[in-house]
Length: 83
View (cartoon, rainbow, N blue to C red):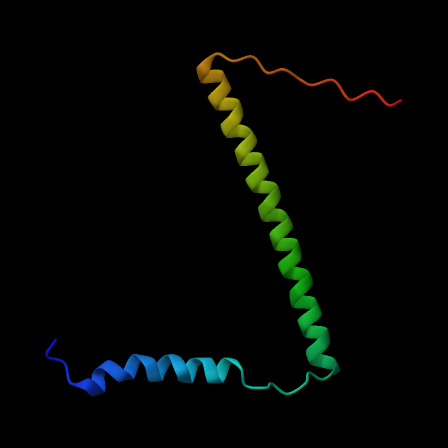
């Protein structure tokens, strides 16, 4: 490699700087910041729930289509009997 040694050290320095900034201590949140963070967390939870539901529906459609193409019959399992 004909690159100067300086340019070989630059990526290591950038990684070290990024790690240092990631571990920097952040100031505590005030009440408004906590409320905003809780609201954002709730919105993210709802979005994740909707995403999971739409994924499940898409998977069900794919399975139904696959079984239809392969000529398989869908068997519904009977609920387990309680003792």
